Length: 393
Image 1 (cartoon, helix red, strand yellow):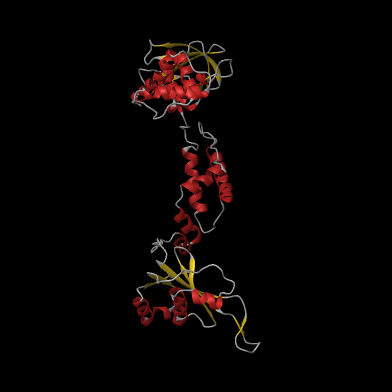
Image 2 (tube, one colour):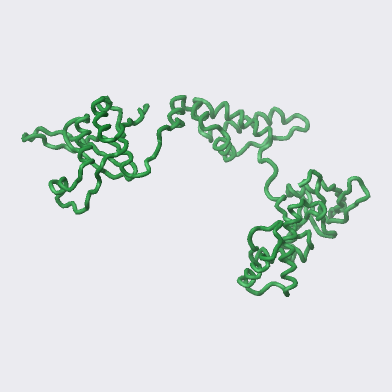
């Protein structure tokens, strides 16, 4: 849209709301420079607005058509409208695209009675519609009825889009209120005191009240409105740097642990790509030997396929995690399982087809696993060894 203020068309004799007062549009006086729109208040007071002032008041909602009268529906709420001469090129192209549908409907005798027939009519018209300004799809029956009604009400200018008037274009917080909120957040929230948002809002209210008491007596100084708790939380959630907030409130170690860069996360794409060996001390007591008082907790060493999350091998024993225990679990994972199931799998009906050797084996940071002979054994099988990263408490 051009930088120049657009011209608006008002309906003579129509009633509007201007700054909360009921006014009636009289005329557009073009003899003045710049031209002005003349409105008469109920008590006779005259308001004169230029095109730029009418545009600003219309966007902010302070100038709007009065609703509630019979027949004053959606079309009347779209007033004021842009004039055709001042509308942007893309707005004109879209209006001509709508005009093609409206003229086809009017020449065909009007809208069909059912939505299904109206939808079929829109599809037929869309095939011959101009490409410039096209929506890319035929309009719905309700949209087509709206275009027809607005064209009958306001002509071609009624088909101009009104999207430029959408949305709230004024900030929710004043510059002074936002500056004070940022100052309070930096002093109280971003500190080792770790105050909650509700406590910070209480301090913000105290700061706003102190500011109003200091500047309230000054001539022309208005009272500052305190931002709401929701506005404060929205600022903390969306505008504050999460790392800076964690760093100032909980320290460098907590921030590094929460926002640390994760490396080496190449996920496997097929089975037998990466195996992971893990050790767990079982929470059961098992008799070791023939004496009853010799009870110990056994260790479970598992070999898991990372891609499918399937147990490909395991080993249960009283020995602590070591290279020998890991080799036993790997031997079960590599060899076929038919003999193992026949010997120890009484009642197990499902097959266990897992076998072969993985390309890479992931292990924990045990010093025994870093021995050269263990890694050489796996290299002979065609598998490489990687170690899990050290977890910092």
